[in-house]
Image (cartoon, rainbow, N blue to C red; front, side, top):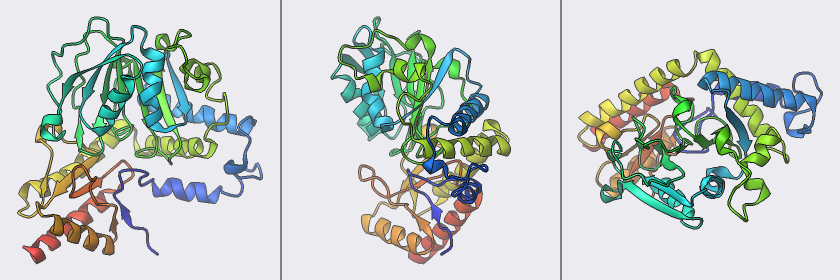
Length: 360
């Protein structure tokens, strides 16, 4: 069967070159006589894979030397608890609630201290990013938290909030490596790899060293302490070995493609093709305010549930899969991550154009 165009929000499409390279090495990685799947995480061969992955990520993102890179497990969801456990020195943190995942992180933080929602876009079903230029940041807040790109609702922060000197913590799961970022503007960046980097099972965290402390909240499990993993080079316990290996291949693919500046332009071009169509369509329309639109996740609707379902079914039959929108938004959603080729977006728009003519 031919490969489909996979618009899944995650786990999501991976670069075909990466998959072919991994397939060629499935039985024998680099002449060692075994698969990476079978490899000891304590071996010199895997240590080289891990070291190369970190070095390439640091190079891609220009990560300053005073930030640690950690390869973790537990999904981004686990970080909803780990962040306050490790960072809530004053037991106060401010959250900007722009979607379901930021809301869940905020609710989880309430277990550990005073978590304030200092801004929210819930009033319009999270269809925009609120003005964050002058927020009521708490004087004793340990950090300010955002979900930088909202996978479900298709919004993104095009400019970072004014945290008034407090460390910024960002969940970047669905926009990781989609464009250049100034890491020094964050206290911590983290994200699940399964949307824009690699397979499910890996969480990458980039943390400023002064935020990696001994004095975490009482009761914080050993496995949820950032210091545990920083002190052990992400090898405190058995890491997701194969997932890290694939992430490393994606990092090399990104470098071969020209880095994050080139990837950002590719992503802007792809998104423009789809948004331009939606802005001029009589049948389909987007659900996000224009100045808050994501380059990665594009939700859209027809305004009729039956027509939406008909479109999703027809699209799948034509080789465009995983377009059904999240239940809280409805309609459709096209996730067009780094590995989605321009051709996939162009062909989707061609299909939508034909569908509109037929149904209009």
